Length: 256
Image (cartoon, rainbow, N blue to C red; front, side, top):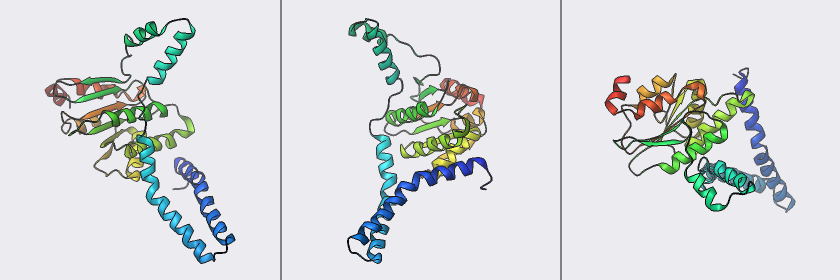
């Protein structure tokens, strides 16, 4: 297993990421010993610290992820406003321009089907930052009585960090409380495995081979109060899933 490239990269990242925690435990032992305590007392203190950290870290991680949920494109709008201001436009003109701006197809387009299902089509492109922002937006859009569903595929052209970045997205989906994750393709499988490691049940996080398989899995189970995010790099063609879901329900079922 250690000969598999992505396994060794994940293991190295995990070891480096946990070094500060190990050093803090060692520092506690030395401090207690320096204060006159025995090694037994020092070990008890360090053990208590480790148990508390193990219990609280997942909760703190989810809390941090949920606070100040990011709205996609806010940063872009602020950058555009700043540029317009430098060019001499006043606040009223800038506000009017932003109010009249339209999104390119496949970029955080929110549609509601006649039966109530909400589809967020962000399938034109994806990178780690935009994927995380889209997931946080999905969590914020969740409605009472409905589920939040993420259909995610490959974030292309990430190079040697690809596995680590897809792993992070899968874990983030769990921390944000996303109800269901469908991972498309091999990178989608990495996200699904990470989500399960973080706490999702197998029936909540599933990997499929392609967009058609994702559509076949989802169509029979989506409800009118559900919100579904569809996002990946363009090469995955997840726009087909978003387009099919937005057809009248009978047509979408015939397509599967």
